[in-house]
Length: 284
Image 1 (tube, rainbow, N blue to C red):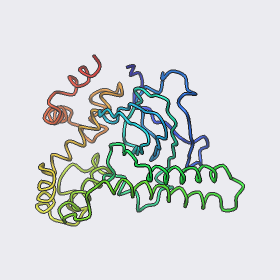
Image 2 (image 1 turned 135 degrees about the horizontal axis):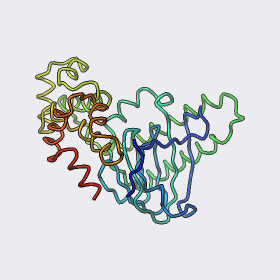
Image 3 (image 1 turned 90 degrees about the horizontal axis):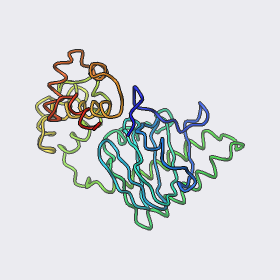
Image 4 (image 1 turned 90 degrees about the vertical axis):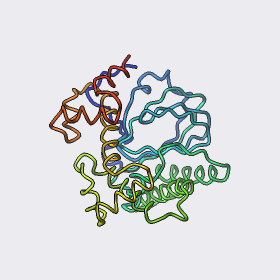
């Protein structure tokens, strides 16, 4: 697979600069062979996909998913992904920028919603299909008074519905205090991993002691806080090593490490190989 860009491309859903919410339904049969669709990319906003028909094979952050319809897919702006193959696909795609997303939804999308696509049952599919169809009809009616206000409300209502379906998959009804703390830590980590490298930084942000944060996270996940911080940094490093031609020092600096030898040792510890070996292995 070609990897020519110096950084991971960011695909914009908007056709106009001020479009904070977009929605569209497309059929992949109308597209030429994959070509540039196979190129890894990020999106410039939170994007959601209702796979109405057909199947798609996708790679999302080094994990390959074979997705059958009807399914729901959420893509965080950080996630790097590419289409590997598709078969007779019809998909409805909608996306919102951070500015247009309800502020209360952002923490949920930062670490609570699973990365894996969700296979829908018949009732769930019908509800999402009807809601997206209504939003599409309204999105086309720019002559309606208070159009942007109403579009924002309806777009966020759809996001709320999607979040609720994903959360139903998570056994959270009897969630312990430790699990709640761990999820809060994961959300904070997703936002701040470049700037904050110490467990103390996250304990302070969550208004708890370092020892209690470590106890909660280790009890829930089996690994201490420091390990999760390092894993998150290395995941982003892997993305850049695999999907871009940035130098190793540039990648280290972008992740907050001016000391490249230290960063290389950290990467080796978590990934089991040096950064250059990871890049070479995945470009063979």
